[in-house]
Image 1 (tube, rainbow, N blue to C red):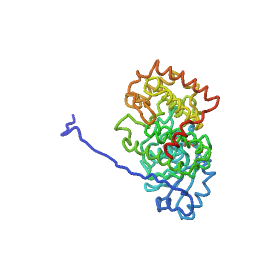
Image 2: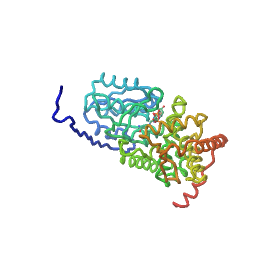
Image 3: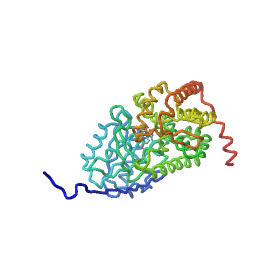
Image 4: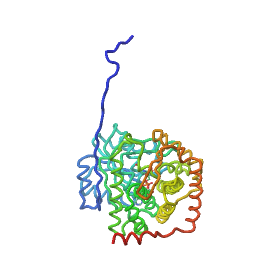
Length: 397
Ligand SMILES: NC(=O)c1ccc[n+]([C@@H]2O[C@H](COP(=O)([O-])OP(=O)(O)OC[C@H]3O[C@@H](n4cnc5c(N)ncnc54)[C@H](O)[C@@H]3O)[C@@H](O)[C@H]2O)c1
């Protein structure tokens, strides 16, 4: 028989973490000392993907040589299909091979998939080593790389495994977007539209006005809009993250707009529908659900759908069935500690949370899906040009 003087002991283990999201122009230029200042004398393992290596590998290696960095590169094909344990294991193997110590550094140099997988690996190696993210896609720069999360897909379940593991630094250099294809840029726009819809009507107007030219010019023209849009999207995202960094303060997260149905749509398509595309379809549906709930004017939903379409994004998929949406609703509630917390809109920039699945399932959802299919057909006949742009220009001079 055991006897204890006190059977219950408390331990607190708070860990306060801070990191910087830095904007820069030309991080790989020989005149830039940002990287050197950040990694100092530590050993660095850069993980990148074949396309990014093809465009920037040589320049990166040259910079490392010029500045005397102890840096090695490994190239891994990281796609949504290979965002798995096996890829994380490969990164861990390289880390072991190069004998990375606890103060050494992993760099994720690539898109959101690279950043997600490297973050998971960094959280595991020696129970956590430093990692830096240098995102090279628009999604990476305004979303995936600036938050705390890493994640991998597991048994066809999107981001089922993962961690909250902040980077030590993030470097955002929009110059990398110059080699990004149009589709990837569009995908990034979906996340910017999301932030505009939930908290910044002015950003939405700016996207209506300049989104197409930014898309057509690889995010360079008009230059002031390019800097403003990217900086504003990052600011808004960081503000949301700051209030609930570990997602344990509330399950009402504005950044979940467009992320209720989309993970299951991506998985149902076996990831042939890309993340940004699925988010766009989800936002189009959510706008129509908002209309059906009597919260949003039909005209506003139409404007949102047109903007998505003008930004090269799909707004409908035949996989978006009533069954898939009902399944998503149940899974979302599991993920959000029992409440659906679907973000609907009362206007552009005016979000509202729907707590209970009962409010949307059945009639509302089916009517919204039927309308979405009609919009989908209309968009197949060609997107409409944004009308608000001219008004916005008048308003702002
Ligand atoms: N952790 C988070 O908080 C978070 C947030 C949003 C998204 N994500 C994740 O991010 C992923 C999507 O990220 P993504 O859209 O960046 O996709 P991605 O990482 O697959 O990159 C898209 C494609 O662009 C190529 N590429 C990358 N940079 C390039 C460049 N500068 N020039 C030319 N080609 C380039 C890549 O090789 C890839 O083929 C999803 O897995 C999603 O779950 C995570």
